[in-house]
Image 1: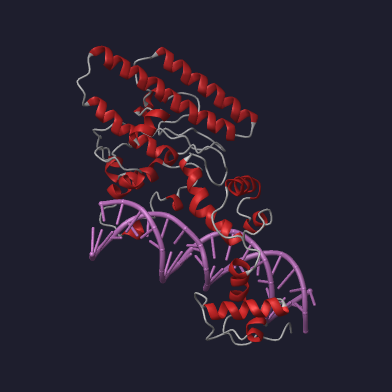
Image 2: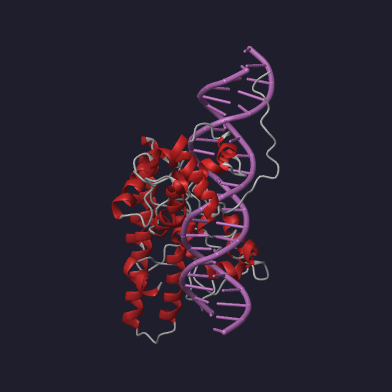
Length: 324
DNA sequence: AAACATCTCAACCGCGGATAT
DNA sequence: CATATCCGCGGTTGAGATGTT
């Protein structure tokens, strides 16, 4: 039953196309149209499968294909359409004359996705990221900054100012996480609980101005457990894990420096499994143990770190850009 | 200059829906 | 209706290009 079996495709050529093959395909399609892709290779005198011919034509040889860099307008269009359509590259391509789905897909994966991640935006949801990894580069920079400050011979007044600034920025960071989470949370009940949580945090900050907002301070606040997770059903993870902080303080590199610190001795391909922008963890709850495993196993067994805990690190955009 | 790491993108693979028999 | 193939799509790969040490 069904269609007659297709001819044997064994021995068909794969890999990059030669100029001769391109010419054969071009000439045939311009003369006859592509018709059945399955039958085309034989008719055109090509030792390729139909699929390969179709791909070569649609992604490279088609005369109306626009090549070269994507314009700012095209970039915006892709971003907007991706918000609506997701990874429906062919659907997105229909709105960008001359661009193929493959080209758009590649552009997304190599440029736009990374750009969004650097901006702290989750490329899949197009919303601000609220997980630990989104803030990691900033946190590392701030750890360096903090160590630098600690090494300076400050007077008492400067030290007080430092503590207050740290407190304020720390609060600002926590609040930004919570507001991001609130914007994501769909249900009114979740939003209201977030609001009350934010208010709780504000009260703490005013009652204890010179102190850092420590995990123990968070303990007992509605919705946050001892491990530092916002207890949740549908809320994104907001983690204040105080067991993490063993980042190499001498490093002025980005995420990858800590990555190398984590798994010395591993080969490079394995390293790329960690923290690379292509393998970021999901936005859903990030278990503290996973973070420990990724960043540093040494801190998970209770060994105290000489460096600041994440919950103590402050965050300020201007400072970040200077010290990153 | 060499070695190594990272990036880019053309091409491949596998899956699922559409279609032919 | 069942089965086999075609076609298009999205994810992934890997060779070459480029950048960094």
